[in-house]
Amino acid sequence: MDYKIIDIPKITDPRGNLAVLEKDTIPYKIQRVYYLYDVPSDSHRGGHAHKECMELLIAVSGSFTVELDNGKEKQTVRLNKPNKGLLIPTMIWRELSDFSSGAMCLVLASHEFEEVDYIRDKEVFYSKSS
Image (cartoon, rainbow, N blue to C red; front, top):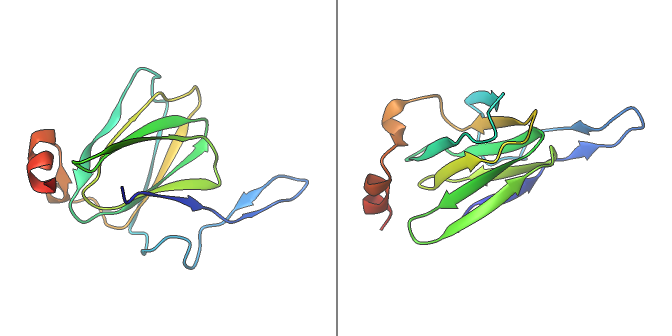
């Protein structure tokens, strides 16, 4: 599967760490930034794929699980470090779950929101990914 874990450069200091996203850390220009927070532990987010938009997901606080499906194989990734990001390319179905208390998921997207870019029906996704 084409997803990738990105090491986010960090500067370690006795006063605390600083993570930096600049230059070529991610392979696209960021067009949209949003974050999920106060997600109940039994809730699911995502449940879609993108036709053109790529996204980098970062657990800036706490942890959560991301289930990925490219139509042929499935992978599960647990995000729990703010200096690691999950790069999700196009045409990958994603579902987020198992949010810890205080978890925050930061998303850096390659495109602005456009509803036509979303595939929200899993059967339609499977028909397009085969």
